[in-house]
Image 1 (cartoon, rainbow, N blue to C red):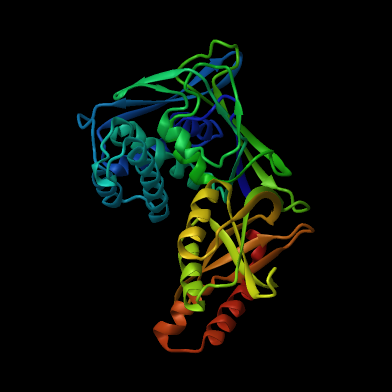
Image 2 (image 1 turned 120 degrees about the vertical axis):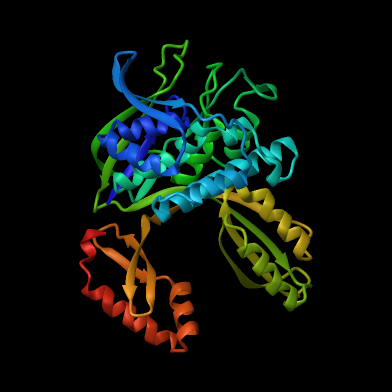
Amino acid sequence: MSIIYFDCFSGVAGDMIIASLLDLGIDFEIFNQEIAKLGLETGLSCQKVNVSGIMGSRFIIDNTDSSRHRHLSDIFRIIEQSTLNPDVKEKSLAVFTKLAEAEAHVHGIPLEKVHFHEIGAVDTIIDIVGTFICLNLLDIKQVFSSPLPWSKGFVDIDHGRYPLPAPAAALLLKGIPAFPTNCEMELVTPTGAAIITSLTASFGTMPQCTPQEIGYGAGSKPRADRIPNLLRAVKASLSCHSQTNQEMVAVLEAEIDDLNPELMGYLFEKLLLEEDVLDLFTTPVLMKKNRHGFLITVIANTKATEKVAGILFRESSTLGVRHRLQTRSVLLRHHESIHTPWGTVRIKIARLPGGGSRVKPEFEDCRSIAVTHNIPLQQVYAAVNKLLQLQELDKY
């Protein structure tokens, strides 16, 4: 399975991501043909450059489009009406939504009112869409990244002089491992932050793998501290003997002995609506006044600790929530699709530490087929598993 590891020793920006991926050997003409499907009036080029003695690529956008500001709805229309791969469309729109939500939060305006240069500029559209085009062309299944630098100083943008990282970038970096740097220069842009936090399975050291290609994407400005302004992208294949990855999660707990069971069900529904909630469960406990109660445990992404605690306070009767950070080891996995007599079903493929795979149909897809066609769910599972047995799973 092919992966990308982004070594962000000098930060990350949208154009640097694309440049580093193009530097891995993508045919630029094919890339340009895909971008042309957006119908934007712009010219693209990719130049080889030498940055502090290291050869890399610089991605350049010659923007001739006169529309400097667009609302999120305008961007959605451009992408949705294009003839791009549906997977590229879906993932690009998700990143734009994430970026717009950050800008809306920072400036205190409704999402539909966001129309900043950072959101509407043609170069941002190309940076985001182009990233997913590159990953598709490289057939990348998962993306990993190093921690990101937290720089000092200020940046001048349309709304004034802001501290670095820019407020929208800082918001997007909540819960993301970072390291301090004395460099007074914008190293992580809002677009770069939105892309990298959407792509990355985990931030940390490189997983055990076999590097195949190394690409460098050059930033537009030189650094004053002699560190080359480059983003390094490592294309690699995962080792069949080490298919686990370590990541940091937040574990939140609260004991409850006086909540209506109906409200407990609603609490679970509210928690499961949060995409950052990874798992939750209850454990029967005998509490200090010899009352039978429940210990509610929620496992979530670290950036969502405050949000999850807020839900527990609002929707339950608890007066306190404990939380701690823990490291967990998870099998590396990805999704593929399989065609069945009733339509497409997603399958989850996990790599086992000693080699081989564990393959499982997605429950919701099988459930939808069972309901739509009025057939037993176990019959759907049996049919899908039989089809999987006929597949050459090694290709995954």
